[in-house]
Figure (cartoon, rainbow, N blue to C red):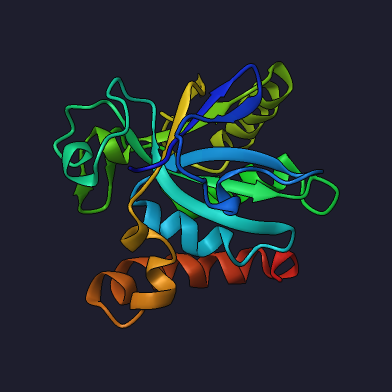
Length: 202
């Protein structure tokens, strides 16, 4: 049985009878931010390098099908986006910093597309669990708008459910760094992040 998380009123609840991997629940003092900006392998690899981030977990959010599989999501018919749940210590790293990294490592001006990855599952989207998170995300959109020549199309939505992706998607770049997609697509994003946000690295 696969496990998944439902997020309601800012409280993450395990909805499976099976024991949940500890990384799938925020620890005491942690916050979690769920973001989608193209292939989740890319975002996961970058956020794993940020100081204050314990875990970046690939998954699915924003759709209308319970507990979707990768195969279902790739059809573009479930409504889900590929996302990462970023578990972080807000005393070390702010949501503003997380969002500024987000808008630097993907193109938030291309609807349903990141490079050669095309479909609604690759849309730019940021989920919030509170009015404070929504305000922070919207402020980050305004900051990003001043840096991009075209309009920002990032969706800002309340989170209702986050479904962790299959195990083989987790730490994908770390385990498969020599594959062409990793070297041609993910590695340049990591290099850009390191150049622009070096002081925030672990």
